[in-house]
Structure formats: structure tokens, C-alpha cells
Amino acid sequence: MKDVKISIKNLNLYYGTKQALKNISLNIPSKQVTAFIGPSGCGKSTFLRTLNRMNDLIDSVNITGEVLIDGIDIYDKSLDVVNLRKRVGMVFQKSNLFPKSVFENLVFGLRLNGIRDKNILLETAETTCKQAAIWDEVKDRLNEPALSLSGGQQQRLCIARALAVKPEILLMDEPASALDPISTAKIEELIHDLKTKYTIVIVTHNMQQAARVSDLTAFFYIGELIEYDKTTKIFTNPSFKQTEDYVTGRFG
Amino acid sequence: MELTKKKRDVSGFLLISSTRILFFFLILILLVLIGKIFIEGIGIISLEFIFDEPKNNMTEGGIGPAIFGTIAVTVVMVLFAVPLGVFAAIYLSEYAKDSFFYRIIRTSINNLAGIPSIVFGLFGLGFFILFIGKNLDEVLETGLLFGQPALLWASSTLAVLVLPIVIISTLEALNSVPKSHRDASYGLGASKWQTIKSVVLPQARPGILTGTILAISRGVGETAPILFLGCAFFLPSLPVADLCIWGYCIPMINPTEQFMYLAYHIFILATQSSNPTKSLPLQYGATLVLIALTILLNITAILFRYKFRKSLGRN
Ligand SMILES: Nc1ncnc2c1ncn2[C@@H]1O[C@H](COP(=O)(O)OP(=O)(O)OP(=O)(O)O)[C@@H](O)[C@H]1O
Ligand SMILES: [Mg+2]
Image (cartoon, chains in turn yellow, green):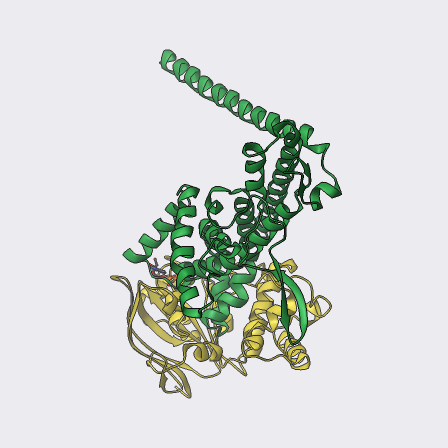
């Protein structure tokens, strides 16, 4: 595999005494879309959250193993988590815009970094909105409450907000699961465009979506990585029976 | 079968109707109380009554200094209680781990709200005046300045009294901020404090404000805790002193003075008047002002909470 961006080695994760991820190893390539699929509760979100250490926020979590980004262990004691999360952006299943204006949502990450210059803020807001294909819809509504946007617009604004921090990696946890087909198509198109600049990891329950947007697909089952391969291979000629049953919808 | 169902219906009916009757009585008592005070008190209310000082051994004049004293004490109380309470709540909800120690603190806060207020008065006298005040005087060599009853100590004691109100309502407000908003903030690379400051606190602000208002309305109605702490029968001057910085002087609340207090003033009018018939209307007037003040504060708090709930319901 060319150009590994994230390398996970023997990762185990426990919620208290319950093991949620079992000895997972895989390499995620740079500037590609990698999809995680698997039945509900198999640990996809948990795994995604280990990649930007969001699981640190849960007291009961214990992790062993290594996650290397550009060869550096992100669980190293000396690593700055805040800085890591700026490099590894995240989009959540349910849009979680702040009850602030559209503009304030967009520049939230910049303000965290102490950027006050109105021109820079506006410029970033515009470029990231264009990247997230939402500029035309919000350019006249920057000062309106973000929560007055439609669900699909909110989710794309979340993506724009994440992009504004200029991450290298974008983690998306079922970003389109609550959206209508048109909004979903927009987001898929967007993922396709973003691939040129970002390494994207996406969790999805939608097989067609995984097949459409991703280059590589990883299939998880009860905390284990069963199969990880090129998306075309996973969907046409999987090596394992479990994978085949899942992608063909024989269990779910 | 038939019988038991009937029976349950009867007891249910009895329970509901007796509750209704009790409820009705409660409202009636409240209405009579407020109505009586309003009718008797409204006649005397005027600008002079609000701003003038008591005259002629408290049988004439107004309640100006008592109102001023109440506001002054309350302002200083808020300055102590709100920052302390808010930070305590932030610590408890965002930083403290669920430990034995933590649970003791939580229990203490809840129980603090149930202590009789006179106990707070004695605590204030013992702790603030005799311990802190006396020692301050000794260390700062100020003579007898802090080690005596004064507005500062009354406000401090009331602050301790209302602290649980502030802490509990702030905790409630902090807990109502959705986890998804915190996740969003952390996900964008915010530190814990940045998340609290720019996501959690702005959303909790109306709740904190509600707590503050409730604390104020509790504070202005109290008499017992400040009885020994500088609350005066009558004072010829307001607890004010000029604060001068670089030659500019502005009149400020002087926290080392004694003060008059509306709730205490009512008590004085009722019990210590030289001519009860003449001071009775004054007493009604003062009571009306106090009640109007607390009701107004409570309504504001309710409105805030309503607005707060509504803004939360939107997402
Ligand atoms: N905070 C938590 N505390 C304890 N257990 C948890 C926690 N979060 C998740 N789990 C458990 O870990 C396992 C994996 O959960 P996870 O959310 O990662 O699944 P998922 O694959 O994302 O599922 P879905 O497709 O439904 O989103 C589940 O059994 C879940 O119950
Ligand atoms: Mg999930």
C-alpha cells in the first residue's frame, strides 16, 4: 500500500472491563477514502474515536496498542491532544452545530487559535464553505442562527466547520445517516472532492454508500476486524464468509 | 372485582379532591395576605416614601435608607456568591471525579440549604467578625475596623446562605448543555477550559442568571442571619464613602459601615415602634415594597428559565 497516513497496531480498547476492540491492526492510506462497515455495536464509532483520541473524554476507557499518524504515536504521553484534534477533524452522526450564528460556527476553530482578524475569518469561512459546497446557501445568512438551517445544510456546515481548522484527516461517523437522498448525494459528492486534499475515514451503515465513496473498506464484527481490502474486492469478491453475508445483506 | 375497583376510585377521588381543597386554601391564604398588604400599603407609597428617611422616631417619613441598604448588601452579596458559586459548580460538574469526597461535598451543598438561617447569623458573627475580622484588624493594624458588625460581613454571611442556590442552579444549567456540543468543541481542537468558556458557559448563562435572581430574592427577605452583623435600627447616614483613584472620586458602598435593611426595618416597625398606630401604615408600605421586589425578582427568574428551556428545546 502506498503512502500510509495512519497505522494502527494491535489496538485493544476496553470500556471498564468490557472489551470493545480486539487486537486491531490496519493501515489507512493518505488521501484516500476508507470506509468502516459492520453491524450495529461492533465498535466502528469506538474505533473511529481512537484516531483523534475522543475516547479520552470517557473515564472508563482503557487502550493498549499503537496508533501512528505519519509515524508518530498519538498515544505518546508527550503528545498534545488538542493539537492532534486540530490535525484530525471529526464530523459526527448528528449535526452538532453550536447555538450561535452560521459565521460563529464556521470560525469557532480559528477563534480557538486566537485568530481575530475579521478578513482572515471571513476568507476562511468562504473557502471552507465552498469546499463543503454550501457557500451559495449560507452566504446571505452568515449572521442567522445556524440552527435555522435545514438538516442537510447543518451537516454540511459541520463539515465546513471541521475543514476550517485545516485538518489533514477527516473522520466522519455516519455523516449522512439522518439525511434525505439529495443531501446524502451532496455529501457523497463532497467526500469525493475532498479526497484530493484530505485523508478521509468514514463509518457508514449504507452499503451502497460505502461502495460509492470509498477506496478501501474495513469490515468489523463484534470488536474484531474481519476483513480489510479494496472496496471493489470487499463488495464483489470478499475472502470471508461473514463479510459476504454482511455486504449481501444476509445478516445485519 | 367490581368492589375493589370502586374502592380505589373512591380513595382516588378523596385524595384528589382533598388536594384540591388544600391547594385552594393555600392560594386563598396567599391572596388574602398579599391583598391585605396591597390595600393597606398602596396608599402610603409615593416617591417620598421610597426615598425619604424615617422621621420622628419612625412614625413618619419613608424607607429610603432601608431600601438603599438592602440594595447595597445584595450587590456585595452577589459579588461574593455568584463567582464563587459558579466556579464551584464548574469544578463539581466538569472537573471533580465521582469520589467519596465529591459525594460528601454534594450532600453538604444540598444540606446547607436546609440549615435554619439564624444559625448562619451566629456563624457569621463567630467566623467572619470574631475570627476573620479581628485577625484582619490585627494583621493590618487598622484598629477596630473589620472586627465589628458591618455590611461586608452581612453580605458575606448572606452569600454563604445563598451559595447552594447559585451552585445548584448552575449545576443544573451546566448539565443541560448537550454532550454533542462538547464533543463538537473538543473535536475542533478546543481544550477543556476553552470548551467550558466558549460552549458550555454561554449556554448555561440564562440558568446562572436565574440562580442569581433566586439567590437575590432569598437574600433580600432574610433578617435572622444579619441580626448581629451590622443591621441597624436607624442610621443618620448611608453606608457610602468616596473612593478616590488618581484624584477622581466616586461614591461607593462602604463595606465597613453598618446599614439599614428592609426586612429588618419591617421587624423594627412592628415590634419597637414608640407609636404603633402611627407606624402601622409605614409598616404596610415597607412590606408591600419588599413583597413587590421579591415577586418581581421571581417573575424575572421564571421568565429567564422559560426562555432558557425554549432555547434548549430548539435543538
Ligand atoms: N461510553 C461507553 N461506555 C461503555 N460502553 C460503550 C460506550 N460506547 C460504546 N460502548 C459499547 O461498545 C461497543 C461498540 O460501540 P460503538 O458505538 O463503537 O458501535 P458502532 O459500531 O459504532 O455501532 P453503531 O453502528 O450502532 O453506531 C458497543 O457494545 C457499545 O455498547
Ligand atoms: Mg456508531
